[in-house]
Image (cartoon, rainbow, N blue to C red; front, side, top):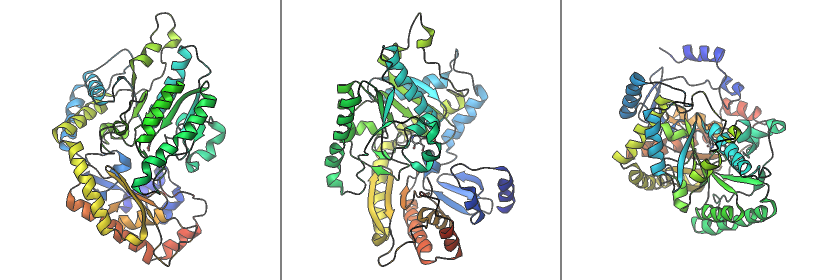
Length: 466
Ligand SMILES: Cc1ncc(COP(=O)(O)O)c(C=O)c1O
């Protein structure tokens, strides 16, 4: 069977996320038939290496036998029960495992069903906690420049990527902003100093506005959707001290970086801090089912516990909160971390990843190569003596060229990154960077008609793919 039959039906029926649908006139959507390990396969038998864990979720690749088994076994037992007034074994086991692994003091789990919803929960919970303490004025949030926290209205309010937020500005609240500690443009020796210097702006803002501020929200160590902008853990350690000093909650959005991605189980571990709220999703269920959770302290929980005032309780819910199938897969995924010593293995794989990238990628076109655990990113720059049309969309061109070479990457503008499943082998890592290098040549050396037509249609797109 061919891809085209599915493409035609897709074109009639589906409106795809984060997509200018017109782009698919020149390059059709890719229908995937099946996936196994790190490989996707279309309806014509072509294979594509999933080098971004399908939007950063499939940490153990696709169709992992243990995760499949956990899902099937749970489906025989209980697929779903509402979590208000009821509970079940997988959600209790999952909560115990998360609390065991989380930074000290995070002992309560509140579930939702996607990343943006976890952010909504954390923002509302923070503001509500201050209100329950008699401080209703503390309802503003601080966010970093370049931040991304999701696309529901609350999460979008604390996001700083105009492609996603500008159109909806009339619907959003305005956070206070501090500059990002982004060190991506600096040599590693300068990261610590640069990150610490960025705390000065936070201190100034906190000292002026602390009586209005509920919380500051950060993506620990890596600002993902802004192009894998990375910074030093010293920023987080300093932030924790400032938050304590000015009585402001710290919300750590580890939706993209949690579960071993940065080299430790949680990114906050590298700064030796515990946030007041830890938001998790994406890799929580290893890419099987949507689920998210916010972990918080007993002190926060107690502020909502009241015999007399019902309204002091946290009146937030989603129909699929704490879904049993998702929880069962999440438990099985956490068990794999121990059984297969994933954190240790990732540390080894991160070393290969950097060595392989440096050996294979064309150094003249790679700038700001940076890495944080199992995330490696670089800026793709024109070859010496060449320049790009300012309207061209290098990310989209490279994405398409890479698919032709059997690799799924989704660059953000000219910032190229890989976040492969943790099960990637050494030889697959070679194949990955060989594929990216070939795709860079294809996209650069063969400016065909497609290139020309993209250039013409590109002027409204400040970012390519996110
Ligand atoms: C740091 C961060 N927070 C929140 C989200 C939103 O998660 P979701 O797409 O599940 O709503 C994302 C998604 O990319 C993210 O990277």
